[in-house]
Length: 512
Figure 1 (tube, helix red, strand yellow):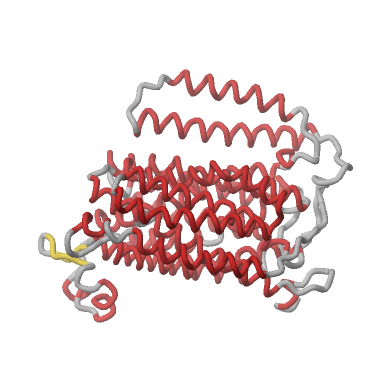
Figure 2 (spheres, rainbow, N blue to C red):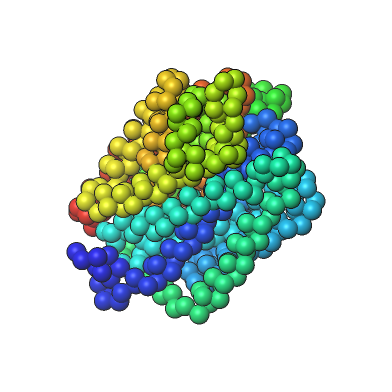
């Protein structure tokens, strides 16, 4: 199929221009997400917080997603893709403007409100834009298109940390001085978002109808096969509920050191099991939860965003604490000297070590690898099955996290950077695999739940931070290691969960 054919479905319309306009949104939320991931160390220095306490930044960010995910799905179904995008951009602009008074208030809670508000707007945009890219052309290339769109946000991931190194980490006056300029990037982004609102208002975005392979939107729903789908649906829903409940329990007990007896967790899990079993007995094929490839995707996305948020947000801490000393020869290298600049390294105990600003710039290298991974991944997904690529990438990242935990010097550092590359395709691929074969209305509903499942980014980084406080930053990588293990399992077993051979390229039309 020609490149033009990737955006040209059977009706003959070419949606390439619409696709690339929507792709600008992916760059927008990448910049905002990467700014969030550089804030932890800033507030650790400014407010003298522990790593676990600073992870409230991630909690506020992903809690905004959790709050807005289901309303975003409802709004999208009511006002369509175009209306949803404009509404989401409006929320992002308001949240960004809030950082101006928040800087004057100069309290942790004020910044957390701004973080949460921006995230609520991003929730709407992601709920709309991710599934919209999958329908702007032939169905079998939906995973390719969403990964191509995600490659656009690579520019944002690279740019964000470099911006933060100037506005979040001042070389004169320390964290207090940097706190007075934190609002500037958000103000500029808000003005840019207002321009985007005008562009989308004038653009013609088609509402596209696709085939409903699983009959989730029509009246031909059949009872779910009790020996397969019903049992799998119950198991996956219970597993997801159990993970969330245990994460909350662990935060209360191990992070916040509150007295929460173990029987509270067991009672909550038991009650959830009774409810979910009763619910699963009444499932029909019209219910999205009856399709294990969707319910599995919500759990896989929970683990993926947990791993991503943990690695991204504690990258600066890891580089400062675990990076071996840089030799004088390496420090004198022209490229290294130009990139890190005078404020990027400092002489400590006879060796050169990264400063906060230098580690923030190093994060840009990680995001560059993330971007390259998206570009290469989009090409790979044109030729191979998406679920096999996801499983393979998950397995590789599990091994890389194992090297980080093992603390083997520069090899562990290289493994951290390698994890960025192999995380690159995970979010969009899990998303596309989760909504594969669902009807248009069900896609919007399913998208809301998959976006909501990224609450893993709110909960799990606090556990990773606690491991870093108790042991060291290398040991804290046990958290993403476990997450990547589940993602690998979902990828390799997706074909059985969906009863389809592949989501792209090969036999994509085969379903229930």
